[in-house]
Image: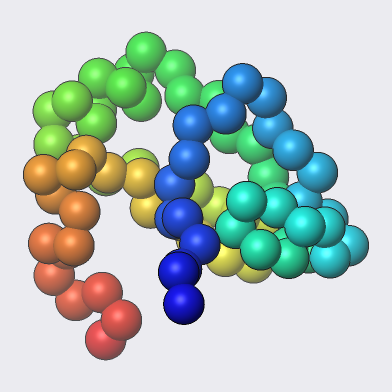
Length: 75
């Protein structure tokens, strides 16, 4: 079974509420974040951004060379 993608590039955001079918499968909520030049610079300099998603979840955005190397995740 082929798994859904974790990250895709889009032209515009899509509806991700109330069980909507999305490229990631059914979803019940989402959020939109705009990255500033300071955010992009931080990523280029090895930093990780933490995003508060609907006051319930946290998503982390990092550069490909740092992905999966964060100490303590899931502990």
